[in-house]
Each structure stands twice: as structure tokens, then as C-alpha cells.
Amino acid sequence: MKFFKRIPLIFLLLVSYAFAAVDINNATLEELVTLKGVGKKKAKRIIKYRKKHGCFHSLKEFKKVKGIKKKTLKKNKGNIIVGPCKDQEQQQETPQIQ
Image (tube, rainbow, N blue to C red; front, side, top):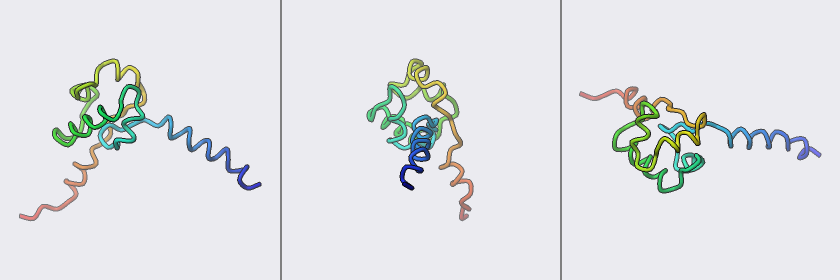
């Protein structure tokens, strides 16, 4: 009986996960492929671009990734966010030895 009481909670968690916005600066490959029009190949390009150039500062900059066009952004309107760069925050917090 307890299991049936938990079904609504489980359902809500799954739905909220499915509709969560993807932070393009910190998303994993698995999170990036949840975007419409982004498969593994494009997700790998996004991560590669991020490693080479650092975090994205805008969606306009996101379009510099090969295969990411205005259409991709339009399909995912409201599902993509440009969050703070966790890597840069960690670098700033780490004391530099001189």
C-alpha cells in the first residue's frame, strides 16, 4: 500500500526532470542529448568547444558550435540556460601559490 502512495511523488520527480532546463555551461553529455536536435555527436562538440574556449557567455556564442543553429535554439526555447561557469568559480576559489 505504501508503494501506491509514492507513485504520485515518483511521477512528479520524473516530470520535473524531463522538463528541467539544461545549463549549457555545466551539462553532461547525457543532459545535452535531452535537447531537441542534439544527439551524441553535437553534445560531444559542445563539450569539446567548452573545454577549448571556456564557458559560454550567451546563446549567441553557443551558436558558434558546429551544428548549433538558430533552429536548434528555437526548438529548445526555454529549455536552455547559460548558467555560471563552475570551473571558473573553482579556479577563482583555489588559492594560487606564488
